[in-house]
Image 1 (cartoon, rainbow, N blue to C red):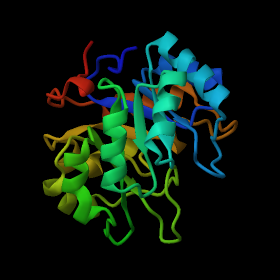
Image 2 (spheres, rainbow, N blue to C red):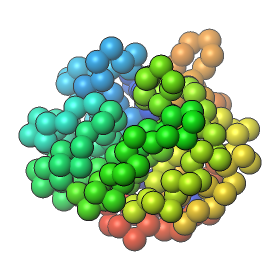
Image 3 (cartoon, one colour):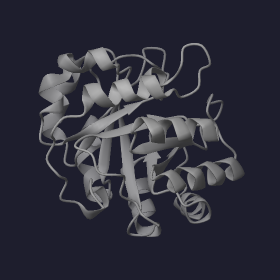
Length: 245
């Protein structure tokens, strides 16, 4: 099982696929990774285990890296999901503590990446800020900066992150990072200082990857994101995060 996405200067992850059409559109438009939701109670893109396995297989067949996006924390259950479904990375949304990351790192195969989401509120407060170093030491491979709305919603909210609220966090990051939070093709110039940071590895998008008419992933929307956001970024030195096979 490969855990390295197709080569590109900047990773493009589209999140919340629910059908093979979504997978095919993401692959055709040049995405690298696809997020598959499981263990996100009430989530609009939630998949059962069989659906997760089927779409992970479909993603691998197109060259996409399937990423489990979850609120779950139990390392044994997550490891069983990885084994049964063949996802390449586990993306931990919600507020799993560093101890859960450490237990997961110890339980997972060495070639399975762990992505830990850091939730940034509109005022710039990040509840995980004091724990960033501990997450890195526990075995996090990649951070993802995403929005936590004022009413407590997290994950695919479509709410934009103010770049001025993100910049103070960057010196604290001990691992490379992805950027999320209401990103669009036209938003890239506002994030110039972030995308040129040596730790930047790419973007994670849900809402802007979808057709406004059908709600499904759409090739024109994803291709526009790829054109706008792909920039020259340093190659990661962690073997799980190599951008080339």
